[in-house]
Amino acid sequence: MGVKGFVEGGIASIIAGCSTHPLDLIKVRMQLQGESSGSVQPLRPAMAFQTTTTRINLPPPRVGPVAVGVKIVQQDGFRALFSGVSATMLRQTLYSTTRMGLYDVLKQKWTDPETGNMPLMTKIGAGLIAGGVGAAVGNPADVAMVRMQADGRLPASQRRNYKSVVDAISQMRKSEGITSLWRGSSLTVNRAMLVTASQLASYDQIKESILDNNLMKDGLGTHVTASFAAGFVASVVTNPVDVIKTRVMNMKVEAGHAPPYRGAIDCAMKTVKSEGVMALYKGFIPTISRQGPFTVVLFVTLEQVRKLLKDF
Image (cartoon, rainbow, N blue to C red; front, side, top):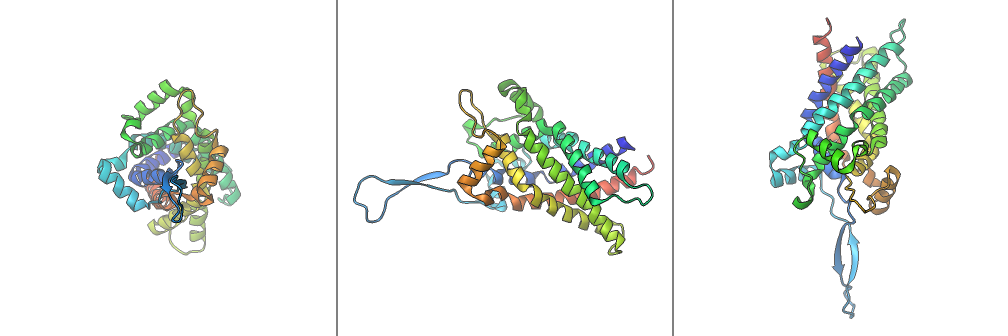
């Protein structure tokens, strides 16, 4: 039964990850908007007589998800929307398979055998454990995915031009050391714990509430409703951590120079100082636009896979 849970969760996760990859790519590009110091434009006061100009920093205009997607297609073609999809597949194979399978194992162990119920706090605890373990396993693929998705926003001379997820991991190991594969791992683990706990626990809880109150029958409608609600909860909880994780993983560290961020807290403080608190919710629209469909596809596929494998 334990192995079966990993297989079911892995199949559902890979299908969901690949089908929503373009939305995830747009989310990453939006989260990196404004990361630089901003464009510097010379301005001269209207009544000034001196010949010198006053230079002030103006934040770059924020671009919406549709505009970001259109720009990607115009610059690099439709295939660019699937940049890093090989890393997504590896990430889902490592991270999501582990978290989904481990959550299923813990749920079986911690469910009351007499009532068949599992308290919400216990579900959250199982999600926290499963998410943390899964993130630690899948972090190298996560770093590679973020870099491959962000590469297209860089000038051609600065692009890393990874050929595949294997090439990305290999180049990182050679040029930056093996520890670079776990860069931002604390953020990845924290985010994964939050997203797994909020996503899986809320799906189970909402689904149970719908069935217990006879609002809907156990079918596609119930699965879609519960999964979309779970995706919204997960997006609200995890977006700030996701923004910081994306920036830390994507930062370029050059030999002899201090890294742009000393760590997660430093990144968060610099982001808030230069861009405001709401910068932590950059990319929220594509996040919920991606997390909603991802969660729906994930759980609908999972329910169908469980039906197909129920006799095994």
